[in-house]
Image (cartoon, rainbow, N blue to C red; front, side):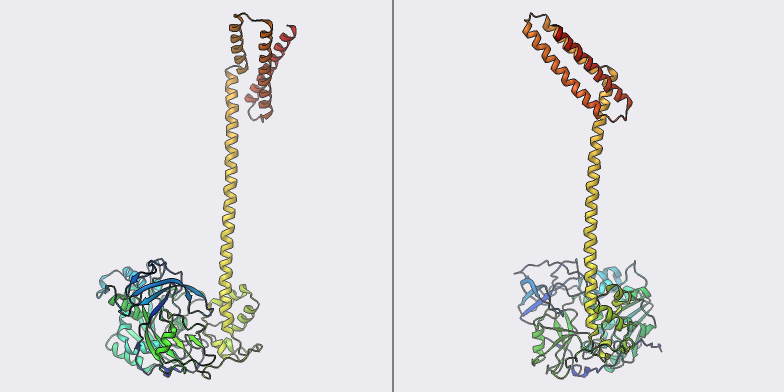
Amino acid sequence: MRRVYDFHGGIYPPERKTLSNSEDIRRAAIPSQLILPLAQHIGPPAKAIVEPGQVVLGGQRLTDLSGLPVHAPTSGVIAAIEDRSLPHASGMKGPCFVIDCDQEDRWVELEPLDDYRSVDPGALVEKIFEAGIAGLGGAGFPTARKLPTESNNAVETLITNGTECEPYITADDCLMRERAESIISGTEILAYISRPKEILIGIEDNKPEAITAFKTALEGRQDIELVSFPTKYPSGGEKQLIEILTGKQVPSGGLPVSIGILCQNVGSAVAVHDAIKRGRPLVSRVTTVTGKSAKNRGNFEVLLGTPMEDLLAEADYEAAPRQRLIMGGPMMGVTLSDHQCPVVKTTNCLLVPGPKELPEPDQASACIRCGLCAEACPARLLPQQLYWFARSQNHERLEEHHLFDCIECGACSYVCPSHIPLVQYYRASKAAVREQKADNARADHARLRFEARQERMARAAEEKEAKRAARKRAALAKAADQASDGDPIQAAIERAQARKAAQARAPKDDNQVRQEQQEKLARIETRLGKARDKLAADNGDDPAITTALQNAVATTEKKLADLQSELESA
């Protein structure tokens, strides 16, 4: 029998699971309108490939593959693609497909794959990605991105997580009771892709019906091991479950694959089974609706995009004064202000507690440094230190104390005698650190662009100066070549004298002769000025060029003096 380990810390809150696990999973009705956010997972959203007014069928892909795709859960018309309220604690809005359902539930033709072992594992990974499957345990990480590729470390152990440790939530419990065969099938597909040495299914011992269902389904099989272990919150955390089943600890800031372990939720395993063997993309999920404000509590197979108000109506929800709507459980869930928020891939529970069921927490008082939070922390952190650094916004020290190893389980807040909402500080600090890093990245990008521009401008200036210098050297070289072949000024004078001789043969009066001599004098003075300018601009790098320019100036000065003397004698 496999040895079961323990993890540090943990708590034992009231489970309250019997409120919703006494009946089978019910199928929720198709609503009149679906609201499908483009982003329902960790990572950037894909881009829409449909337009308002377009008719769509169930299972039709609505986005491209630049991010995890979104599919139409049923047939209808795209009424709009616009910002709507998202199921987020901040009440933020984001782009959503709004589909007016036609209630006919017409579907595209599906492409099931019965003999998946005849297909390359890489093709199965792509098919899982194209089915839009994200982790259904609450985190929402794309399932295909967790699966191994040739560049990943080898998987030693595949774990199917059926723990569901959060109080109130029973979606996975009922799924395991009723669909154990589908979970095992999905696990086998994941095992075919990852090729692990061992396959484990872990379930807390507070789910006897689910354990019995798996024992029956696995009877006679030796390749998959069912492991039951004592109930303690938060044993369903990925790192905590890995430690329970294997005794291994995931390094700080690391991923399970770094120690050869792949962990998937039972809901994700069912979705993988549906995607491969039925060809059906992820368009619905099992969601628990519980809390004493709902009379008809239970678990519902609900279409993604269904407004929460519609799902609550299926559970005979009665609003009470100051009623809270919590997506998730009481420990890790988030309170929503808008009941029109849609059910998304990560909506495992809607909790509507009665007025006295989950009373508002007491007013926080000063930390008494009792250390109970550190004893309860399953991640072996120092919550008290994180709290002080969060309050002082000391992001550097927060990261040094491994803030991002916090799984936000709420165990520290649960045991705090001062009622300090520690998890809220950690969540806000994580967001602030991410924003600061994003700002720093943008600033670095702007700095690099500025420096690159400065370098381009400097290079352009250097190239311009080099071209100017090259032109100057070429001109001086030409002048030097001409000087070596003979005095260009003398040649010009000789040409002028030849013209003068030709003109002399024609009779001229004295005034005409004197005018021509004055014009000749002006031309020689102009040439002399240019020759002196060239000599003044010469930097002396080439002695031959300098000598040639000096000779040209001297010759021109002599010619000018001779002409001036000739004019004076006349």
